[in-house]
Image (tube, rainbow, N blue to C red; front, side, top):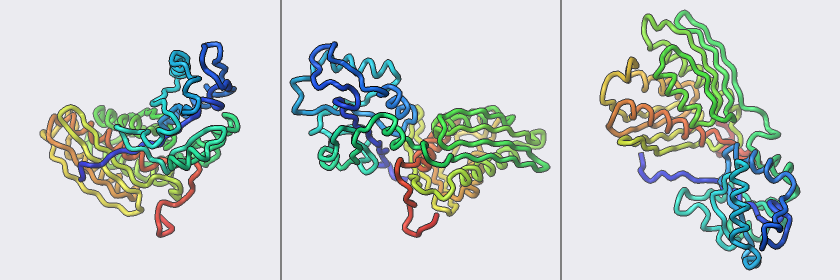
Length: 339
């Protein structure tokens, strides 16, 4: 797997003048007059975790931005639960994202009263400011679009499983399989995949762990496939390079409609606690078969607990990228016309 994989981030550049404050000059604290709805709107978008937020300043007004007033604005936004990653001038937009993750300009936006020229120069989408309710409706990944949820109940002579999944969740997990370490790993998938997962499995653990692990993977894969629907507007591909102390995990997946599983992992011991490490590959292979996705996984040598946890965290983050639904995009990510 290539070592050069690099995440890309979508930028939401919000002009200070108009969308954030209504005043033209910011030389004193008294000049700060907040735009109606700015806190609620930006907080909603921040909680969705879709965009990295940048505050956009106009170079021609540089003399009218007092440093201490700008800092007060940033501190207030942060206290309102709105993290601002960068403050940039309109002639610096190509630099957004450096030296960290590369900016995904194709899916990044500029909100301003008149954003066209700046957005064109930066290769980003312009979004004229018409009030925060409109901005949230246009940029939210879920508002006005069908929910991506699935519910499954599956009962065999070996296991009984109930599962609820929301791909557009916030990372909440309520998981009980009877296997504590397995539960811990599935919680990592929910948290790092930003999906909500409720899972209850009663399996024949007095016989073996195998049936529980396999059947959970089957139901989870089927649920993801069902929740994705026709896959319009999704990223389709997801990859993650994730360290955990001495271990480095690589995960890449593609919701191509074809199952393929590649596993380059050698665990340093046969058990993690009471959980057999040989079942990890079986879990991911079964998921790949049911979700009909390509799944490639690799981890370096190290502590077996770290190896497993790095793989599950990287899988969750890769899944998050692949199922991500771009705002305003209903295109199918394939030239075949079907996935």
